[in-house]
Image (cartoon, rainbow, N blue to C red; front, side, top):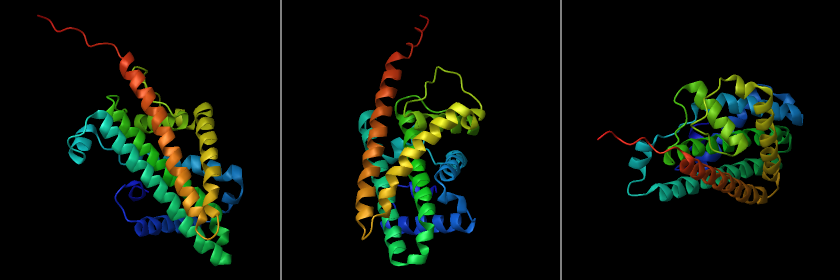
Length: 241
């Protein structure tokens, strides 16, 4: 999953990783993925499980990777790369689905493919969210549990994490309100990824376009929120003479 979020891998490698992920999920015998509610419940659990392992670069690392860029230009680059990555995941999913259409018996894995693609896209966007918080001076909590809660809540609500609000425990991810918000947002993304199943690779093109557009829309909303929060932060106290 971490490898799928990278922005510098070849399309063939991405398709290979997604196929491998589908195979691993299928081996677990998750027949319940044929039931929409069960599929969304599985994706919710998978996102909560994956979130702590998403590789978020801190600001110093981002500066090294993208030298000479100011904050806005750096944020633009991160959004562009993430949008390309989610588009690539959609295209890879469409490529895998094209094989599924040709080999009829493997059509049974279609719900698994949709769930795997959705979680891979969400993981990429979680990485983007964490790194945009770094760029705009509002880094996520450093603790594993706190960081997971913050980034998942930010994705589900598509808003920045307010650094002035005390953190909450992992129960927030598993609690009723936050979990419902995550489920509802995942359901929308899951439905969008149904385009992956279009025949003759048309699904790849449509899924690629929709993923890119959705990632950019999420980033635009998040950046606006982070800019507003940055303006509202109290000024540092004056230094003593």
